[in-house]
Structures are given as structure tokens and as C-alpha cells.
Amino acid sequence: MSDVTTFWARLARSPIAWLVGGLVALTALNLTIDPSFLKIVVKDGHLYGVPIDILNQGSRTMLLALGMTLVIATGGVDLSVGSVVAIAGAVCALLLQAGASLATTIAAAVGVGVLAGSVNGLLVARLSIQPIVATLILMVAGRGIAQLASGGQVIIIAHPAFEYFANGYVLGLPVAPLLVVGLFAATSIFVRRTAAGLFVEAVGDNETASRFAGLAAARVKTLAYVFCGGCAGLTGVLTAANVRAADANRAGENAELDAIFAVVVGGTALTGGRFSIVGSYLGALLMQTLATTMYYRGVAPAVAPVPKALLIILVSLLQSEKLRAWVAGAWRRKEPVT
Image (cartoon, rainbow, N blue to C red; front, side, top):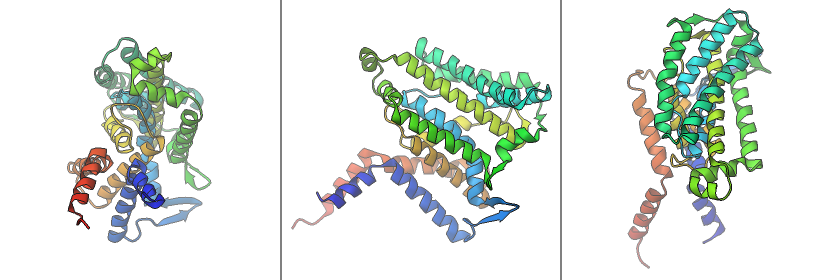
């Protein structure tokens, strides 16, 4: 097999390549319909345009997908992140109304997420409760806690410094995407330049074997849930800052599903093991690009989940080793024998 053939064979097996291909195809479709889709303008020193909107609005899903990646890599899942987003937003609103400082407010919101992740990690790693069941408990109870904290009301937030996190700009670029990219880069460097990533993959591949090899498997899983909870808490900050309010009913609604979808289409298997931080980012970007496309094309919100589900199925099929092997075998059988 030649080097060129080997290169293309490896490229075809890469989830990143399929994600990039999907983004290119979706962008090309939008450009065909509207040539100004990628147009970016500068106004008052700030960048505006559909690509900026995609990055800005998708930053929250990207942040949730970052934490979800490590949880799924350990063989688990966290269904409670949407409720944690709502709790963190309520905490921000209450503290700001009480006159707390911005640093205290953000630290408290992230701390609530870390506490929620610790509870999930305790239930999953220490008490051996199935991840779906353990996190479903907080998913249901957490929404009630958020509603109880906010009194069932939408709390308006009027705090310019707080709103800056989701609506501010740095050197003409929106703050939220820059913050998320920085967290992705820092996490990727940490898990790939230290043994932490290998620990996570080992626990996800075979928890029993990793434990016999001397790894503290329960601690690794717990820390993954703690990190995921911290990401959810920070997402709650960005969500509340973006809408300038804390809405316990709608904040983080179905956010856990979008995060899981982004991680899966990014190439991380739900069974655990190898994971891709970059793939999760691109997966979230692809999901947000599709959502923005449907919004600009006037697709009804009730119908919007259908194209999203079709996209997930398509990308998953393209990444399937068995399907590609079957297609390759069928193609070879059709080739004439010389």
C-alpha cells in the first residue's frame, strides 16, 4: 500500500476529518443560499456576523461538552448538567441582588457546579450506582432546587460587569468564545501532556484492569464528574449573563442532550476509553452551525430536532468502522477481476 493510500485510509478513519467535512458541506450549503453567510463586519471596533454569532451562541454547549467528554471517556454520563446550569444561574442572581462582589458570585456558581459533580462522583464511583440513574437524580432534583432558590420567578440581572462575560468584547472579539477556547486549550494540554489523559482512558477501557494495575479508578471517575460539574457551573454564569436573568425553568433546558451529542459526533465512544477534546469542540460547533442554519431558514422550533437527529445519525454512520468495512468490501466485490 502506497504512502498516499495509507494517508487517505487514516484520514477516512479520523472523526475529525468527517466533522470538518460536515462543517464545510453545511457552510457551502448556506453560502449557496445566502452568499453573505460568512460576511463579518466591524462596527464600533467589534466584529459582527453569522460566524461570530455561531461561536458566541455555541460557547455554552462547547463548555458543557468539554466536561462531558471526560465523564463519557470514563464510561459514564452526566444528565444533570442542564439542572446545574439553572442552579448556578439562580445563585448568581441571588448573590448579585444581595450585593456580593463579582468574584464571589462567579466562584460561588462554579463551586455549586463542583459540589454537584462531587455528589454525582460519589454516587457513581463510590456507591457504584449506574451513571444514568445517579445523575438522573440530580437532573430532576436540581431543577426543583433552582426553582426553590429563585422562588419560581425569573430574576432580572442588571450588572454590567457580570453581563460582560457573555456579551463583552476583547480586541473586537466576543469574550465567551475566547474564554471557552482557552479552557479547551488548557484542558487539552493538561490531559495530553500529563498522565491524566491516560488514566481517564484506562479507566474507561477497563476499570477493573486499571484498578489492578494500581490506578485509583474511583478517584479518577470522581474527578471527571467534578470537572464536568465545574464546567456546568461556569456555563450557568454565561447563560445568566447572556440573557441578563436567571430562569430556573428554561436555563439549561435539554443542554445535557446537546452536550452528549457533541461529544459522540466528536468521536468519543459512549462505552468509554479514547476521547477527543478537539472532536468535542468541533462537534459542538457543527451542532450550533446546524441550529443557526435552521433558525435563519425559518425552520419551526418543533421541527428543528429532526434535522439535528438526522445529522447525528449521518455522522455516526460515517464514523462506524463496521459500516466503512462493509462499504469497502462491497466496492471491492463490484470491481472487475483482471
